[in-house]
Image (cartoon, rainbow, N blue to C red; front, side, top):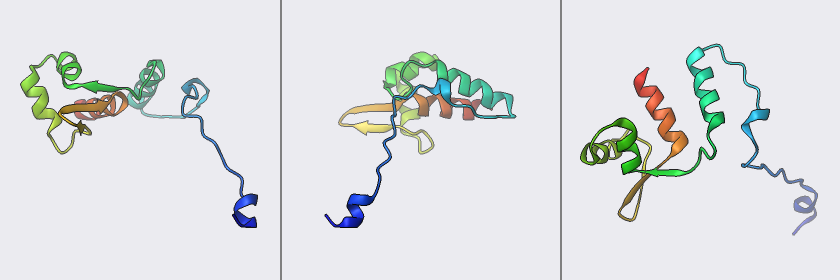
Length: 98
């Protein structure tokens, strides 16, 4: 290590920090509602499955798999399992309904 690296300060960001302390001024009522609903989630970064999405959208699993394969749907394929982060799903869902 050289002296420059030793003198640099590191900033640690706590990803588990509560969203209650964040103040964002939004003019759009839809964005305000979205932010409030995200604040209420216990863990917005959990991964949900095809079955969870199918239940939420009240569709069959085959149709849910078709949605997971779409280019505009932010899902990932882990082995043979399709997953999506809950917050990504909520954002996708609200954008598609507007």
